Image 1 (cartoon, rainbow, N blue to C red):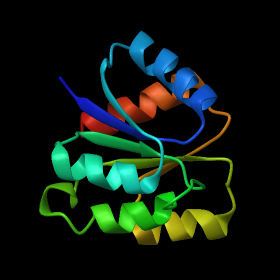
Image 2 (cartoon, rainbow, N blue to C red; image 1 turned 60 degrees about the vertical axis):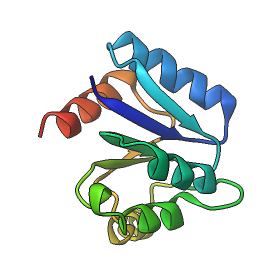
Image 3 (cartoon, rainbow, N blue to C red; image 1 turned 60 degrees about the horizontal axis):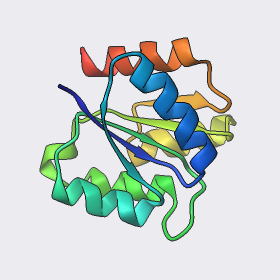
Length: 122
């Protein structure tokens, strides 16, 4: 069973993600409401995939991703960014931080599930 961490500060968006992800059969989901909490969660558990927003309180997603990539177990774990930001500049910052992919909000559930499947089955 794949363990997925969602790092997102909007409860409405969390609900949409959970609906799409659970409907596709992924049920072992952990939620963090900001980058600092996400960082704590990866220190406490091992996840197979991380989905993260960028703009969050306490610690933004890009900073969190950079920090996560410092942990041995997370050097190759896939991290997908989910963000309203879609400029080339932001995507480049995400790539430099260590993100493996970028999904723009609002997302299309089928595309999100396809990306998750590709990440988990690589």
